[in-house]
Image 1 (tube, rainbow, N blue to C red):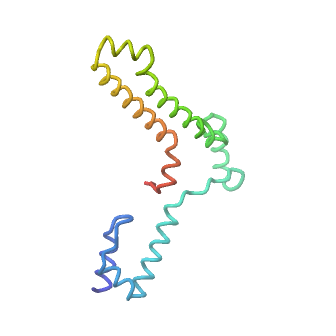
Image 2 (tube, rainbow, N blue to C red):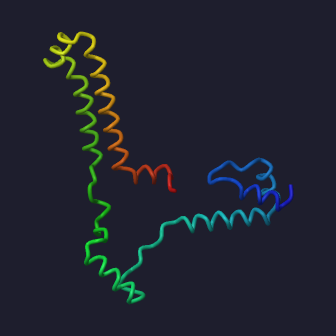
Image 3 (cartoon, rainbow, N blue to C red):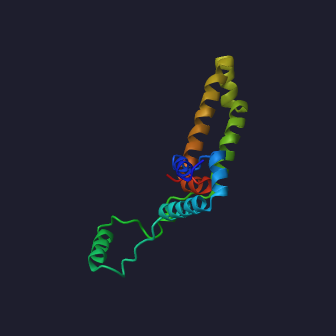
Length: 158
């Protein structure tokens, strides 16, 4: 395999795609291609890293004035934006246990007994559908409100 074909094949790969065996063997044997791939990988990680927040107290006065106008208009994020709207994991667990306890208690409560007497076995299907919808909504809210954790944990950056 030539250097050009190995490098072209490497560039055709998607992010995190497995490198074919022939290309891997070429990279192990060819220091020039190995160095090129190392430099490209380093450049990609640098380019995909989040940008630093610009310090508005230094730099161009026009940028400083624009940032001040944005803050004065209330269009910027608050300083503690990371802490806004957070629900602690303890509260999520309490809600989950309350939901599970409700699923266990309702069929044996007076409402569950009455529903079974009136509707017979037809009570179970709507009850199970209700439980499934409640668990789906709970899971969606949990994932949606903790999406930053899942993105960081599993490396799901765009």
